[in-house]
Length: 141
Image 1 (tube, one colour):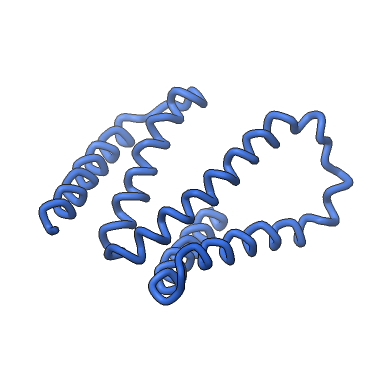
Image 2: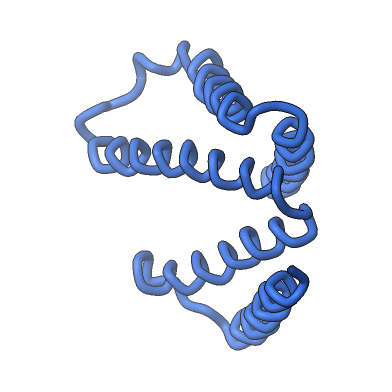
């Protein structure tokens, strides 16, 4: 649970700092700086462990990580531009609420995870909230 809380706090920091940076500097430059640091820091921390990694057993995971890294780079470009043009209160719920909804549904297909009735109940409200916020954004223009 501690890692979930740390991730929550760090992602909040990323959202607020990324928004501030994107509103005060070129979003491409901001994205390049953010992605460079997010690549260098884990490598620097993990260097002592590289000799223990079995590349052959990790092949599919490494391929997936490459695609995930490309997705992070493109995501960072898109979200930084979104933050520079829109309110955080619109961007964050649409992006992150939509991510929760889609990733939960897709995890049932990809990872064969089970969704409980209570989770379905929560996802229903999440979906309703997503639709309301998206609609509010479009009529608010």
